[in-house]
Image (cartoon, rainbow, N blue to C red; front, side):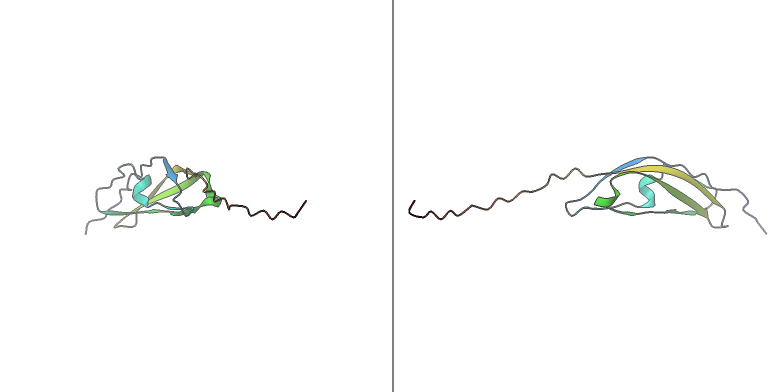
Length: 101
């Protein structure tokens, strides 16, 4: 029987995410992964993947690397959510009614 007792190496990178036209952004674990590795296959997960206008600013997220033997390592990455979409302004043409004076 072969036992895998080696923990994966979790390597993170920071990320800046612009919100889309509707005020939403989505990331995946791969976006904050910076070449994590293990001697066996592994899976990545991150604790937050969706952001809205209320989330603008910096967020510290945790990337979790889990290998086939359930050895787990984590690292943190700062994800900065920015709103780069200019507001759209629509002006109405005013209608004026003048009396005789």
